[in-house]
Every structure is written in structure tokens, then in C-alpha cells.
Length: 138
Image (cartoon, rainbow, N blue to C red; front, side):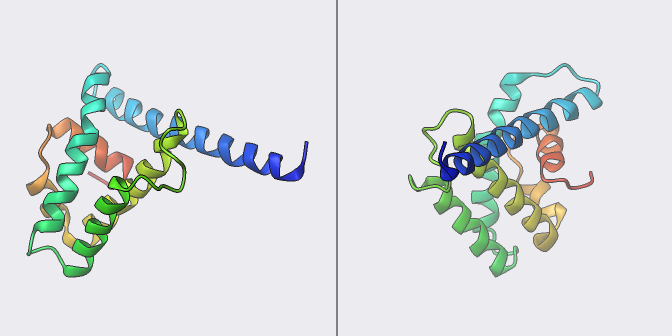
């Protein structure tokens, strides 16, 4: 096998492991809270996170640099061009999840946890899961 083939296999394997890690984090968060894992609730996190980012990007009380970062994230998520194409099973959305978690972490650090809580459209359990995914202490 050519050397570039091993590089591709390594990158793909890394993304698969990362995606599985994200799923495990969400699962562990649900189990720690003493709740059964509700996969439908976990699936609903994606639209809630998109609404959260949109609301934070439109909030004039959020610092301007943070709003620009979040608006850029929305554009990145909507564009068909990604670091890893979305049509690839499993790993196609891993880059989106990573970038989104980093953006939420950035928003909490610069806009404050209160702004994120104020704009969160979903359930409190969903917010806990998103904060755990972004590695923010609750």
C-alpha cells in the first residue's frame, strides 16, 4: 500500500474514534444523571444547538468577536464544503461536532454561561449534555 494510503487510513480511523468518543460522552452524561439514555433526545440536540448558536450570534449583548465567530460557524455548518465531507458515513459529521463544541466553549468563555443558558431552546438535560460535550463545568 502506498504511504498516502496509510495516511488516509490513519485520518479516517482518528475521526471514527473521535466520533465514537463524542457518542460515549453523551451516553456517559445521561447515565451519570441517573437517566436512561434517550437516543431521540440526543438526536434533538443538533437542532437545539443550531438555534442556540443563531440566537447567540444575533444577541447584541454578546461581544462582537464572539458573534462573528458564531456567525462564521453557522456559515461553515451550512456550506456544502467541509473539512470532511458530510456524505461519508459516521465521520462526515465529526468535524462539524468538534468545531461546534469548540465554538460553544468559546461562547461560554467570552459571553458567559448565563447567555448560553438564556438562549438555550431545549431541555435542561440537553443543555447539560452540550456543556459536557464542550467540557464546561456545570
